[in-house]
Length: 315
Image (cartoon, rainbow, N blue to C red; front, side):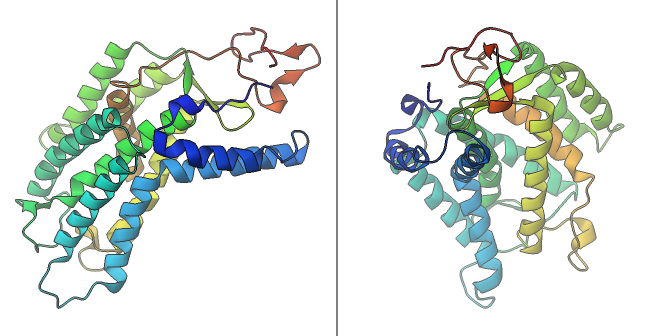
């Protein structure tokens, strides 16, 4: 059987880990409920690996909230910034991230910092006013939170060997992403167009299907659903970060409360900007017809791609 994971797509630091995990999973059953459980286990492991930057950042923010002394001379924001730099350096030197991917992460950092400078100036949210590693009211660690989203997307793209059916033209997605980014600024002065932009996103990406390889099989998901799921988990992480007092929205200044579910719309739109930036180094590719489909897509007539109908080869 053709095994989906291609070690050549991994960094050199990941190949040893991949080989050991695959050796364990390969001993598990190939059919029945156990095969589905194997796929689920592999999915969880890959997602955790893809989230290593964001997970490390969130862990540091939470640890600073729980254990960092309040009366220390070294500001907590500065500690978070230094920790974020250390995480990024470790990602590169540990060969968990390529220098090519680092370019996108840095771009996420810059795009996010520019937005932070504007949003804090108009009072959308605020940070504790301590520390020296900051630009105006924005601590430098904030750019790394956007970089964590970029790191996740570039890593998940290669770990799951993402392929796309009916992906829209990239120039169209770039124009849409530009309009979304501009709206994050102009909505403070003119009517907010986010709901119109969401409608356009549905129109542009509505027919696109994402295919991803977990361990033995390739699975399918509407791309819009993938955007929504990632936005939801970012929203959960945002709740943890605001509870940790990393930043606060105006409604949380008198006491923490969950971030409004309306923020999901903002994170959903941010996913479009994020995906367009990732396509800079990882252009969307069509499905590989050689990859076996999930068990539910296998019929008595043989293996066929459920989207294209093309026969699938068994290796």
